Length: 138
Length: 172
Image (cartoon, rainbow over all chains, first blue to last red; front, side, top):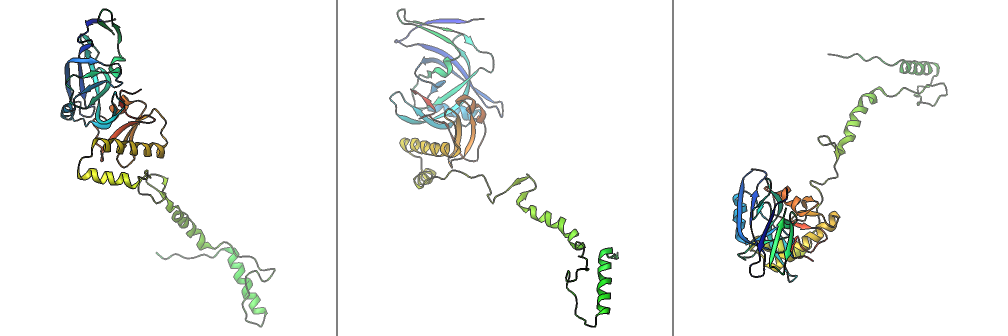
C-alpha cells in the first residue's frame, strides 16, 4: 500500500515532523526522540543531525555514541558523535517496528534537526518548486 | 613391584658370541661392535623405544594444546605501530580534551595507519581503537553502528569509512 503526504514549503525549505528511537540491542532499552520541525537536507548523507546535547538521551538507553569526523558544507571537518537509530515515522507515514535503521549524528547546537539522505532513502520525494510544495511517498 | 628384564634373543646371541670369542683368544681386549664380520649388529636399544614417545611429546612444545595453534612468542595479535607525534597526542588527550582540529587530525592519522596496516578495502566501515587496532567492521556505516551499539569496549573507539575523508556529512 502506498502512502503519501503533501506539504507546503516554509521559508523556502521543506520541514517535516519525524520520530525515531535509540535502541540498545544488548538491554532492549530504548529512548524515543520526537522532532516537530525537521528540515529536509538532500546534501547531508547521514540519517538525522541533531544538537550535541542529545548525547545524554543515547546514554540513558545505555548506548555510547562513537566519535568520528563529520564533513561540513564548506568542506571543513569537525569531530562529531554518531549512533544508530530507527526511523519510526515521517509526518503521518509510519514504518513497521522497529523502524528503518539510520545514522544519528550529534553535533553542534543547531536547534532545527536535519533529515538527510540516510533517512530519505526509504521514501520517494517530489519537490514541486513552482508550487512551493513537496510530496513524500512510501 | 619388581620387573624382570628379559634380554632380546639377538642380544643374547651377541653376548654369547663375545664370551666365546674372549675364551678362544688369549688376549682379553674387548671387541668393538661391528669390528668382526660375523658379529651381528645389536638390535635397537630397548630403552629408546620407551623414551621416543616422551621425546615426541616434548617436541610439540610449540603447540598451544588448548587452542591447537602454533604460538610465536606474541602474547597478543600484532598491532599497528603509531608514530611519536600520535602517541604524544594520545598522552595529551589523557590530561585534557583536545581541540577540534587536533582531534580531527588524530582520528585521521590513526585511521590511515590502521587501514594501511590491516589492508582494509575502500568502502568498508570500521570501528578503530585509539591504539590502532580494529574492534569491528561492516559493509556500511549503519550496519557497523548497529553491530557496536551498546557494546562497551575496553578502550574508546571511533568509527571510520575506509577510503573516505570522513564518516558522514556533506560529502561530495
